[in-house]
Image (cartoon, rainbow, N blue to C red; front, side):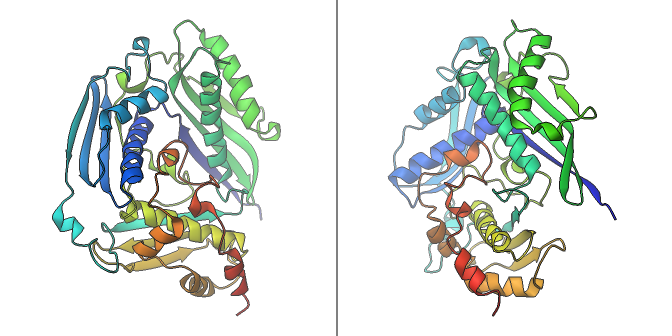
Length: 381
């Protein structure tokens, strides 16, 4: 019997207001960790038409030029001139930063490092793509990366920094058969016509990323559906850290614990346990134990061991799920101190994660498969 279903994913460019906030927060985090790897950082950022607000808690031996970091991040994202309405060279910046609560530090300053907060974290992997991510997720991010490349290299000089992409794929028996919709919104100069913009974006972005066999006469393609997107970025829409959680993770293919990542150091399990759960999930799929898996883990503040652990293979497991759990518990350790050490998280690596998703880049330690042979060796035991 044929089974049909849809998979939708969205991505945003680095000039999107929410993503700009994520980058500022992680750029600040990286600067602190570079000088003091044991820095405790929990930074939130807001951008709006009148400027930038940086707020949160920091405990560190490092001293950094925070304003320079904020301005350089904004400029690098493309907001470098007054005609955009928001210019990193001179936009107002307000700082509301103080030391981290001593009550929170109680859970961290112990021999067996406790979780920096309570919460639920999720990791996911699928054999659908080489990256272990949903195909719609890969396509969405490739389209926004293409928009940025075309803007930066001035191949499409009329593009401005803000933008989004979204794609829905129709599947039959787990095989993608066509894209039902492809949606792109890209900020642009006033000089370009809607007709010219749509033509060039379809040619340079959609046709270069999406395979021809997935685009049919039934595929709905919407490019700047309102017809105009001149005013964009913080001048048009406020931004906040952590508002693009599904863009950062797995699209609509997996649950999300609700905690954002950017601006948080590695003692925060919102970030670290999500990375480690992805690391484990990828090992399970790549070892052939299941075609896809979602791992859920939860913590209590100050406690090292998870308060719950669960897996769901969506019926794609090739051995009993209890066996998969046994293998996970034999090979992987979800205590914060171990996750930090295994994934080498006390390094300035986080700005790169805040741009086009936290998963899929093989340079990230949580994407590596250095325990794959160990996992495979336990399958027949």
